[in-house]
Length: 67
Length: 256
Image 1: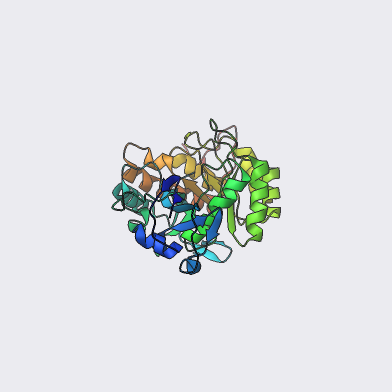
Image 2: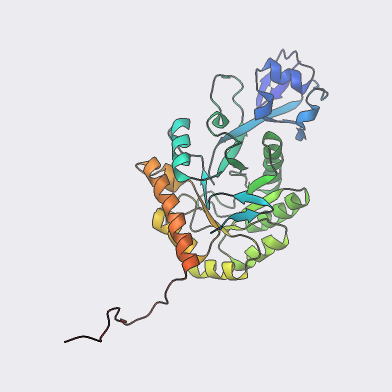
């Protein structure tokens, strides 16, 4: 499956859900937030939230910042 | 003597809040924040590095059990982006706290107060505890409170400028009419700037560059801690009025 993840087109994604995607990318789920097609996915829904061909996924976390 | 800052039922152990940007590395960030005594640290929300998973995470150095993590919407130039970052921040974190920034201009980083007001209202309705970064404008401070802000964060001077409080008289008016805590955000340069903010009666000060950009950030962090404490104590103690002429402090009685 082809997804756009953090702005990059990424091919050959095997994951079917958000949880599987985070596992595939080796991203710690408790430290990030995930948005699919501009909708924030609740952490509790990662396991059920299905991904589809062409979805635009954003994975964010906290970084150093002031104002 | 208990003098705790409490906002929406949340107790804060320090009146110095610090940002986590511009440090050399996470180790320096951690040491500076420890030296500052702050319990609130601001963070930004950015894309996770998914190609290099060995890269370290800020939260490995700042335990969210020890610090209150206050995400910001820095870099957002319109209401939609500010809302998007706020909602992501809430999901990435553990609380409803958000330091709301809707920036109006790249050169000054002054807030777009119209967008700020709109975003404050929407986020407050969604249950966020909103800390809006705003101008030192007493009218806007009132409007933000009406829109549901938990505290108001007027700037001392432009972000990173180190100029200190440019308009103490506006700050006094904001404080006089305040029904929520007032936290000076941005623009202070050194410990005396922080002390002045606290002496005016501000409830807390948030800063980043003044520590991170100092030649010795750890020492400056400690100086800021003392600046806040000294300023707060002086405010509570009640300063003497300013006068043009001298008043002798030694007695005339007993003079030869």
